[in-house]
Length: 426
Image (cartoon, rainbow, N blue to C red):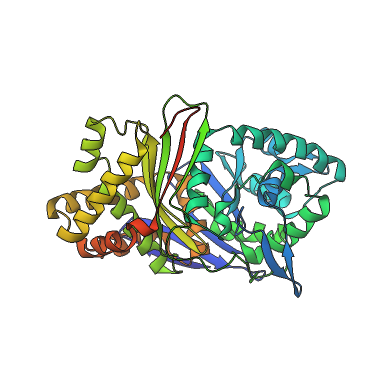
């Protein structure tokens, strides 16, 4: 096991690649009583087409999310209940590109880790349990389809991307999950829930060598390290369509305004692009900018406002959104500000202040064990080192961010998604 010190952030990280391909990361925190474990697979909602055993496999939308729901079922009961009864706080989530299972506990860590690794690595499905789950997830999908926030987000993704499956809802549709069988779940588990496609990240007062010993004891002895995926045809540089407008039962229009960024590279460049995207958002329409102050004063945005950068395999984007009485006016104002910055550059003092604020947020996030473990897993799959962020971040210049704004925040790369009140005209 390799131990690496990161003096800039005061972290010590242990890392090992086991014989089966599993990567184990342990951030030792001897001064804390609690521990956090995160067991993640490089498999999410967008992984619907993959190559395994000499053939391409196509699966319905929603399988990764469905599989996450079913993994807690065991032949003897339910792993959630087992962990809770053992003093742990467990949960799981499926994102566009990752599925993770985790728990936090202050006692019986090793016992809980054995439970976590066991139920995630040993699937147990029956046709009857799959049928029952289809009804449960079907109700969840209907709720999501009635959620304006969800619909406005996927409206943006469908506008920005023509092919990339990041545009498809993680939960799938009622029709797509009806195609899922127990065999579908077993096949996808065999493909993606193997040690070579997974990582185990632990943070707390634990013994790194013992974490590895438990993983070796519980998990399969072999893993598949490379599973080719198909994410659709080559995307054009510009947005697929300029806007999508839907009508739902909302009192005020809600919107997501987005820009199609360059696909994120692997390695340290992945982290650098993340920081560039975040700083571009902060510089153009962040809550500390003159533009945000003007939009707020004009009633074009309110406190229900968020923004950020997202990257998935094969695609990346900048986005901002919230409530607005006139989303199209917001789009025009942001376009004008991006063009102005592209021509005139950023104010030096403003950029220095924004950069310091973003760095401070990243440093504070290291107080969260959950943030550390999830970020370690995401960083592993992207080929980056989480705790090297100070060196990567400080190397970014004002000119770097200005160039990103000029290149990405153009009319051709822009899409607007709006959910407006029923019966309202533009």
